[in-house]
Length: 107
Length: 118
Picture 1 (cartoon, helix red, strand yellow):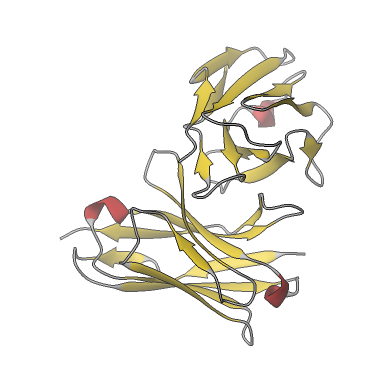
Picture 2 (cartoon, rainbow over the protein chains, first blue to last red):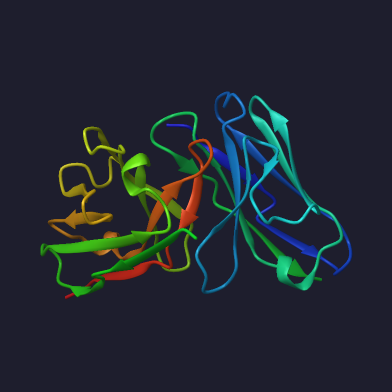
């Protein structure tokens, strides 16, 4: 199966600053990579699909990039509601697999 | 808008069975593949199973293969997960998920908690 490795595990950021989250796949994904946000006590929410396309209603401060096996989620100017756990997920191969997540916490 | 509402979770003893349901609305159910994804307490996300739009194709994670069965009733816009021979490690919140524009997990239910404990 495709192993997804996210880094860092925890990112401490001040409100208003930017954040860069990384995701590496054990094999090429042909851009079939998504990012999800999960706030405490809530279900995950789709942010980005196809490596770089924002889902409906997602603010422009969220952007995705990458190719092959290396992917990045960038959040510019973090707002209070952005402090959460972020997961990357590949949908290029079966079984579908997720990374272990990056927790973005308030510095 | 798309709504997915899971039900059927609860506390069950190891080795027993449970059936989860996911009632859907706000979209044409019989046009979309549907998934179950679970999350153990305090842990990450694990894909469990998928069923094609017409129910003809199903895939399972190795961890549940042979014990769990996914099914759907397109006449009732409802997805099911039949879980047999439950183990402690199956304890998790189970989410019903609809694919999005591509095959990403576009829409999630609120989840239903399954606790396997004696």
